[in-house]
Amino acid sequence: MIKMNVAEIPFIHEKAEVLDVPFSCCSLEYILQCLEIGINQKCFGYLSITNTESLFHATRMPDHFQYIANATFSCCDGVAVVLAGNMLGYEIPRLHGPDLMLKCCEFGVDKGWRHFFYGGKPGVPEKLSRQMMEKYPGFSTAGGYSPPFRPLSPKEDKDVVDRINNSKADILWVGLGLLKQEKWIADHRNKIEVPWMIGVGAAFDFHAGTIKRAPKFYRDIGLEWLYRLAFEPRMLIRNFYSLLIFPPVIKKAWHRIKSPK
Image: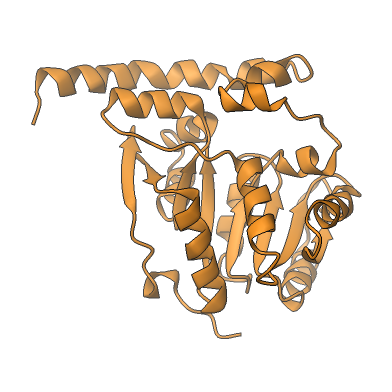
């Protein structure tokens, strides 16, 4: 496979910045069309699913900021980010990572897209593949791998990269959890010969059925975190990030109001 630079096929779209972190302002339909172009033309890129916690870390971790800034698309996955964008005069569409996964899997059935699942606890990638095949008849899986809960040796890492590349996958889904999955994608961009890589965190467990997902009502109004809090108390700590981003956003919004362009 001859590797192309994603910049050779620019996917032009509007962007908004919240605390200097970019977010894509485009429809899901446009993203799916761009994924199809990338797959058909062997163009390589990755999507950042950028939620509130990810935004917070990006303001303090240069490597994580660069990961988001260099992504082909930075998809907003957080109601707090949407609200912050509104305060700054932007309309940032929200695209939840687990929903994006489902839409991609469904959209790619007729096109023969092959999906590889990297991450999750032992057995989760296989369960996820079975669930997708049941949900979307004709769904094509290229394989899956659950890495050990420790750094891989250079040989193990090479074996995994070879396994993924030999699978001829079109989309590589990475479910290692925030920061870890983004670092893995950044470290492997020049090794993986798959058109698209997308880190989706808890989506593996949601769609494999190993963790119960919030009912649609909670998801639609952006309160999935509140539902998960009942089952995962650690979510309380994670949601403090939503509060931490607002003081600088409010300050910037106030200056914008006082000094309009």
